[in-house]
Amino acid sequence: MPVSHAPTHRHARRPLAVLATLLMSFVVPGLPAQAVAQTTGGDDQENPGMSGFQPMDSIVAVVDDRVITQQKLRAEIAQLGGQVDLANMSQADQQRLAERVLDRMITEATMLERAEKIGIQIDDTRLNQALNGIAQRNGMNLSQLREAVVGQGQDWAEFRDGIREQMLLEELQKREVYSQINVSDRDIDAYIEQRTGASAEQTEYRLAQILVSVPENASPDAIESARERAEAIRKALREGEDFARISAERSDALNADEGGDLGWREPARIPSLFLPAVQDLETGEVSEIIRSPNGFHIVKVRDTRTATGSASVTQYRAEHVLLRPGENRDPETTRELAEQLREQVASGEASFADIAREFSDDQGSAQRGGDLGWVSPEDMVPAFAEALASVETGELSPVFESQFGFHFLRVNDQRQREVAGEDLREQARNAIGERRADEELTKYIRRLRSEAYIENRLTGTVNDASGQRALGRQ
Image (tube, rainbow, N blue to C red):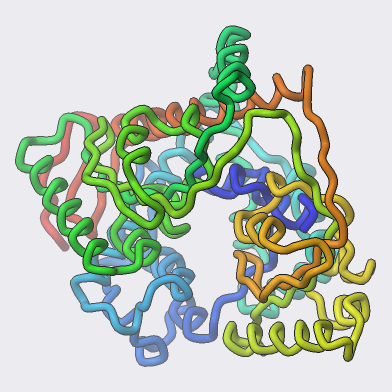
């Protein structure tokens, strides 16, 4: 997919949905009927997987001058329905999941409070530009986008407010985190030498992590409790539990609901605490528990590949068909239709271009018969990049799933593009900056939370910038 429809994995895993991801990949969301019932106060009988989420007050958290309501928390949990088996979770597991989702919402609220305090504003002109971008990427104008949002049971004003908040978060991160990161020429020279020197051929790792966080100034008992949680998680993983599901249910990482995916990383971009453990693991294995200042980590090597340090990049001339599940087509039915359409192309019953024009939900490429032009894997979401690299020129890929829906593609040509000089240095600068940005953003969020008044009514704790004390449940 072109960059306008599929963000790079680097952007996709940036915490709290930064604007780069939002404007490139946002598609009009739609909750299942059960989830909508939950967010509008419907009967829990319509969604038994949500029945255990019963906070004792309509307000479940207070963050400085902000409140987080039960309704908002339930809406966030409902959107995990495709990743977590809510219906079959025990009440205790449901409670733990609710606590983790609420914790991520608290983090976002502390950042929004900070943005307001330092005077960051997103005026209606900028907001409307963003909304127009979202509409265009969905093949709509702004009026049609509004109709689609309202038609899926969402309030248009709330939708606008949600986009505005994401833009505020992006602006805050740019001002107070990313703008403070400096990458020296010496850093860049060392990075390029590592990639293009005599030992330039190296193994790259596709990683994922689960984090059990430990608050700053935690008591020995709290640290030991976190360690026990991490050991229980690792035991479950070694017994065959799914890593992505465990991440969504139990990880404290900001990208827990994305399976904890860290993407492809060369050794220079792997945190130094992780690297020794990662290099000793085979594909599919999980690490021992790794202690860091943030807590306890468990890292999985999802895949490995050998990369050369040359500045040559493979590009693909590709075409694809995308089918998105929706209100009238569930995921299973969507995959079946994708398989049927792929078979029609493979058998010669229909041309790729005709199928794309008639059925593809990527409206930009559909008008061109599915043609994407020349694309680079690094500009694609991981599932799409892997599919590109896995098929020979002229072949159809199997049907595969990404965050956008179900695809199949055909690679019609390949070429090598040399990257040198300033382009190579810019790539090095971005890679180093990305690694440092992840580290600095984590520190920044911890500091904001330590300085905020946070009353969490699910866990019964209060942080008043002088430590936590027990809060009597209401």
